Image (cartoon, rainbow, N blue to C red; front, top):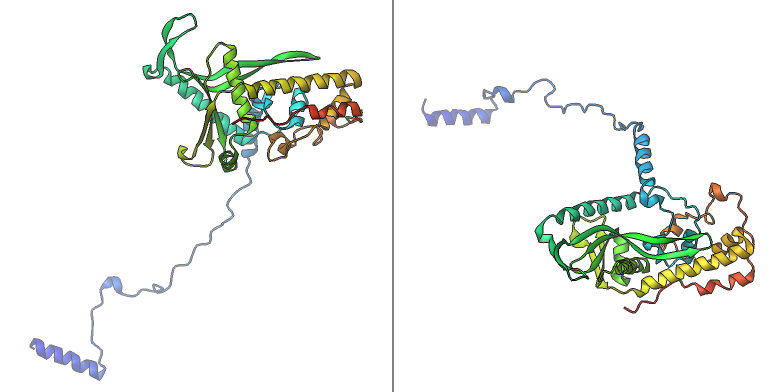
Length: 336
């Protein structure tokens, strides 16, 4: 049969409805239930078990955070002297007990500080990070540029029960440019505030005090730098650097204010007793919670119950002592 005859035969068969045998490839032949989708296996979505190990792990971590030297410090330091919360400043100076929960974000910031401390110490080994330095006795030598966590004494506070030096550690002291550098690991809210209003009084006073501490050692200080590092961004391109010329006046103001507070509290205590002194502290103006970390955390005895103060009396304060409260300034008037 010719090709044309074959085509004609197929066409006639289609018109008459006759079936045309067609060989079906084996892979396309239907099998039982092949047209139905497979049944989805039953899975248990609630597979998370009650954590058994985590409570112990968390307790170990938080115990380590609470026992860190920074958390155990009882005497006031440069980072606290500049607060605009007079109440918290007095409570700290009086040695009131604080109730703080282990802070995770401050701990993360501490880890950043520790890494930078090690990093800049290692950089000092590189000759590129050394420079010629001429001392006061006119001796020139090659010295290391960076001083990490450099401890200084910024002043001294003296009171009825003794006194102590106010000391603190500068995050980084750049000996070549005569600059103090302070790392601040912060979130978006703080960055927004700094962009709008500049660093807080507390941060600026802290930087000033560090410069004073270096001056006490005979060092020349030219600049204070505060670098706000983003805690929830992916790049240091979102960091906010702030630099200014060194000015000792804010630090002097903060030390004088703290000493005035100590003197006033001693006067009240000598005349009326420690309980009236504590009641006087309770009357001091406090900053709003969004401006004072301690007020926000309600860490003081007059804000929440503490075992040490459960049955503590809060006696009335004679008016003559209340009239002294306006003498204590909450804010420093910066000139720039």
